[in-house]
Every structure is written in structure tokens, then in C-alpha cells.
Image 1 (cartoon, one colour):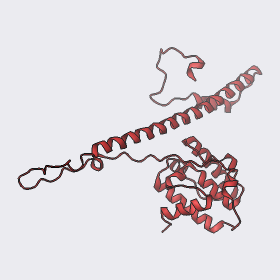
Image 2 (image 1 turned 180 degrees about the vertical axis):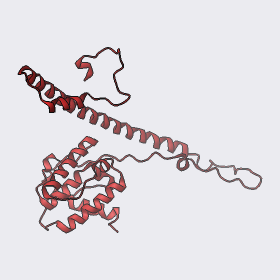
Image 3 (image 1 turned 60 degrees about the vertical axis):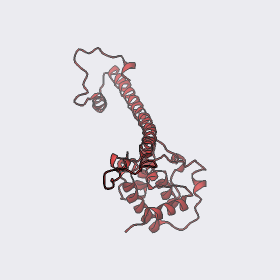
Image 4 (image 1 turned 45 degrees about the vertical axis):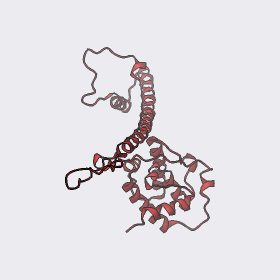
Length: 247
């Protein structure tokens, strides 16, 4: 059996001088990167975003980890797609593995985590909790006494529950709105990258065409960029959009 969540968080916070309260917060990738840095002391911590708020930032942190694993010939696969969702079980299992790796490989040298991350802020995003179901938010009606009458003289048990449920749902809505904003920024981030690639490919094709040449690889890249999935095709007869409208 691996260490409990409490034990792992205590170890993590002590080693890295953090204040994590949930294993899920490790899904940002920053803490994992710095644990590995405490072993090897050569992770590019200036590139690690310890206060990452959006999934694309989490992914960037994990790419640094993947590069380190490749460089050090560590064969453990990193389940990035699962970890960045900040779910407890996935991050608990990976943190347990990280702890075992650290126990086996930490050389015992002095390590200053704050200096290594250059004093970068370490705020972590709140994790999104599941919305409570009606079974957990609605109080059961009290069982009546003989005769079927409810006692008089005070508020009924659970009368404040609906208001508490509304407040919980409002907090959940605010948190999900923040998460949606992060997803939109992530979408725009990758969309801009694809647009840059498209422009470069098109420019190079035009240069080659001007010289009477062609490049099959560039054509294949262009074909991928312009490919569509079922249900996303441009309808026949639809007016063509200009380049600015398309992107």
C-alpha cells in the first residue's frame, strides 16, 4: 500500500515548501517538475509555471517533465491527459510513484526549493467538485408520529437546506465559468499555433511554385490543416469566407 493522501501532501509541502491542500492540485504539473528537480537539480524551473491556471499551461509543464524523463532514460509513462484533469485518483497514483522514485534516487544534497523556482508564486487553481445530486442536497421529510401530524413550535428540519444547495450551486457555477474561460484561452492558444503553421506552409509552397518546384510533405501538411470531420463540411453553395473571417 502506498502512502495516504495526508502523508503525501505533508511530504510534498515539506520538500518543496508549498501549501497544497489537495492531491488534485498536483495536476498543474509544477510540483511534479520540482520534485524531479530536487533529485537532479537541472530541471529548467524558470520555464515551469508554478501558478498555472489553465490546462494548456499544465500541459506545458508536463512537456518539461517528459523531456526530462527522456533525457534521464526514465521509462515510466506520464499519463498527461488524465493528470491535467486534476482528478484525485489519477494524481494520487502518480504522486505515489513519484514518492517512491524520490526515495530511491534522492542523493541527499541540500535543496532550496524557493531559490530554485526563483520565488515564483505557487497559487494553485481550485479543483472542480462534482455537482451534488438531489439525494445529497435534499433533506428527507421527517417521519410523522402516530396520527400523521408534524410537531409545531419551530422550523422544520432541513428547511435551510434549499438555500444552502442554491449557494453551493452558485459557487459551482462561478468555478465552472472560470474553467470555461480557461478552456477558451487554451482553444485560442492552439488555434493561433495552427494558423501560424498554415501561413508558413503556404508561403513556402508559393516560393517553391515560383521556382517551378513542389514539396509533397508540405502538401500533406496542408491537406491535414484543411481536412474536415463528418458534420463539419462547408455546405455546397455557401459563400466563401475571406481569409480574415476564416481565422
